[in-house]
Length: 571
Image (tube, rainbow, N blue to C red; front, side):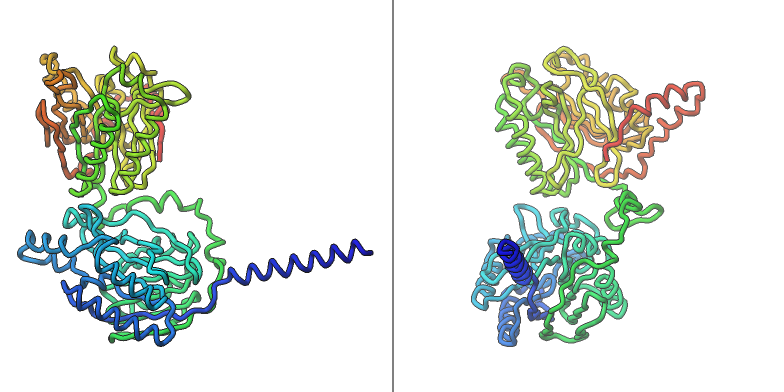
């Protein structure tokens, strides 16, 4: 009996402590203040003073969380730039008014949050190196940056100006009020943004905005809140709208500036609409671009860069140079940058064998981090170990800093005696676009291009370290070969080759090039110099039509079908 009583008391204590812990973790009611005011364009000082004055008033009314509109610091300027008759001068002014997260305006607002002991959310034009973003920061009570969200969906043309970029991540985050998320203005019109935040656990979504609004917007945001079971706060220069997780409007202050204060006290766990979803029925389709429609992001258009780069005998310096080029490409709005064969190590057998597997992995990690920081894809040639075997490899690294595909060189030559031959060939995706890769000597084997094109590839990346200038007789055939691969398949071919170095005499012969589906050389580098060739490709004209006509010769269909079964799909 004594043992039973002890066990019973232990159970009661455990239940009590568990309930207490759960109660402590439950989000507590809090006061949210939405600040509606029209910021003065180009006048940071006036806007910061207005934020400080309104935040102080909200604080005296008991606000724990204070939200200001999109572009609150400098006045949301992108439309002023795009419509300006003096575009060049206006772009310069636009770039100069932006600041980093360590800049004076951010520091001043950090001091404000800290002095009032409130959470403060505001929009500003962020500069990160040579790239600008439409950004919203969430500062905690200590003035520390709790979360940074860069606008991913834009109402205007993307990369206009070329240094003004969208963000690439949509993530929820933990706060003392519960898990939250941010979407900026036009993002509210893309249902997947709010849904992504909700699936990541957000029970409160803030939507600092600047653009259009009206009754249609109120109804749309009610739907966003209800379908995602989240509180939603719309903070606009001339409207504050707060909606509960059932889609009911809690407060609506339209057509006027001022402070809208509301208590939020019934955070909920995800509702049935989220838990009853069957994403396996639609996940693949949601990743596609809408068919028979166009969008401002211009599906079918891709800005590419062929980087013709000297690679020396020091891997660290090579990788540093690659990362520098990635930053330069990102500043020019490039979406995918292509580098030569073995660019991490140089195409030097002794060097390649002298590096360890760990060094190759470290190089990959550094380049992946640069892709993430700069928001672009990279095609990188590198020696690479798989299962203890060394391959001549091409890596495809995404803007999220992930290697999404690896392609090993299939047809080896004498200089590849250190490598194992690849035994697979696949298509992969750059954004919505199916692509494929060949490495140097592979280009002499037309089926290594044709089969992936028949599988759907519309853009062929060709990375190489071809013979040096001493084999001058090969230069014209090399050029003809690349042109042939493009025109015989009706696709773009983007080649990155190493240039010739004279002191010491090493390298290849340069002449990196971008070739259209009609076989027209759109850009071509010279023999000796490093270069970055940038071209906007209209992939709607890269249809693979000639390759698909191979199936018209019906007596060869079995041959082609056998080959197509060997082509993988890495997406």
